[in-house]
Structures are given as structure tokens and as C-alpha cells.
Image: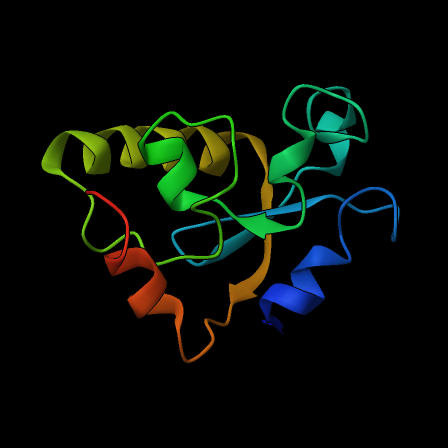
Amino acid sequence: MPTFTAEELAQHNGETLPTIYVSLKGKVYDCTSAANFYGPGKGYAAFSGKEVSRCLGKMMLTTEEANSSWANLSETNMKTLDEWVAKYEAKYKVVGEFKPDADFEKRGNAFEP
């Protein structure tokens, strides 16, 4: 299965490339079929081409915490994240794995759980 760095994943945003990929808990999902949600100009477009575990776990529509470790999320936020993962697993095909950079954990730890 291919791996995607943050830079590689960012290309799959529905604009740079026509595919729309979103990563949750390190799995990259093909959300191209949901372009009405994740496509350019749509409600969740900010998530396209990013690892958004922290964002969805905390129910954030912004991506300031994207591409960061989710390991320090609170128990409540981790449960929410797991619910999102279950939804993605049911709807979208896994097309790869997210490859974190050297500062992935550090960035995640800098945010409130």
C-alpha cells in the first residue's frame, strides 16, 4: 500500500489533482465520491489532502491542527475520532497510509488535548 507524506497528500485535494484523499488515524481514504462535501468550495474542502484526526476528534472545521499527532487527545475526543473512523471505513476505500514527518508528534503535543 502506498504511503503519503503531508506534501504528497496535499496534492489530492480535488484541485491540484482530481482525486480527494483524507487521512484519519494514519489511513488515507479516497473521498473523491463525496466531492459534494470535500471538493473545492464545499463545506469540508479544508480537510481534503490532509491528515485530520485531531480536527475531527475535536469537531473542528478548521485545519490548524491538521497533519499533527492525535495521540494526546482526551478520551472524549478520541471516542469521537473513533466514531469518525468507523464512518470513513464504511464509506470510503483505503488507498494508502499517511507517513508522518519528524515533527508530527511535537506538533500534536503542542495543542490542547
